[in-house]
Amino acid sequence: MKHVSLVAVSSALLVLLLPTSALIAQVATDDLTGFCPQITRTLSRGMNDALTQGEVSELQVFLTHRYSLSEDALAGGYFGRLTQSYVQRFQQEQGIAMLGVVGPQTRAKIEQTCRTG
Image (cartoon, rainbow, N blue to C red; front, side):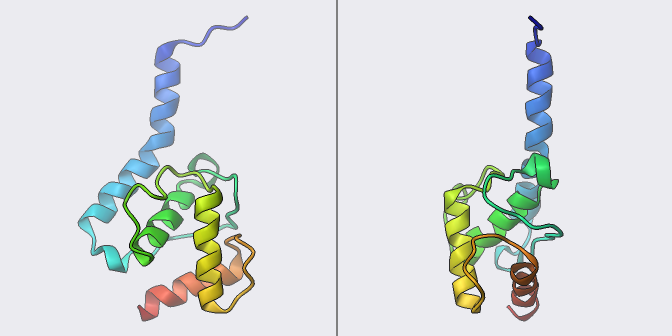
């Protein structure tokens, strides 16, 4: 049986949390209504920041500010049911298929929303 040291586990957790922490610090200093995520890949339920280089957290910050949610409502960098439901709400408002997946159409609508306010 292979033993994993507490230091190794702590280091791994820190690496996973750093993108989220850095993003929260960045957003805290920005005008929160103007946050525009940089999403370059398709995001769907079950994905996390480790798989997406922090893009799930960027999406969550965008949704949090768009819908005036509490800061921890969608925090954590995991694309779960709640994130999916807010993605579907955004899709419905934008007149695109409510798949709950952030694909090319949803990314384009997010970018358009950021440009036009």
